[in-house]
Length: 123
Image (cartoon, rainbow, N blue to C red; front, top):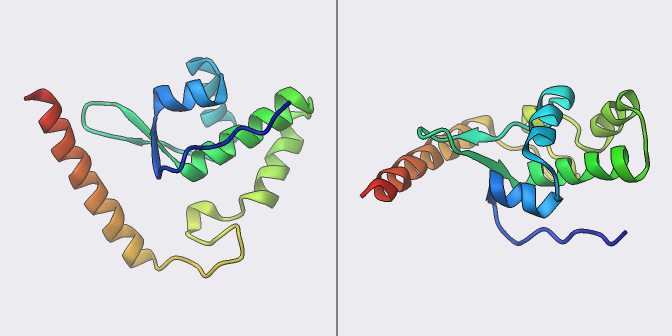
């Protein structure tokens, strides 16, 4: 099976992730709870947005679970090996850790942008 090329974007709407990964939304929701390796941001209107890293994790889970038929326990171990400490702000690719203060400021700014975009959509 061919490797899926992820578009060069920072965030993806839920519908885009479902189409890209060729998954049912219920499967995506289940994996989010089962593996706890990705957590989409939710804007004020309830729409979910996934980061590029979230999409990479989802595609890895799909590959390991569906194509390679590995069990869930092994997949959780593989996620820890390949996507270590993502929630703590440390890199999985060998680059420098992210400054938590800067990350918080970026998140706050992005939330403001999403709020403004949501308001524009209603007009």
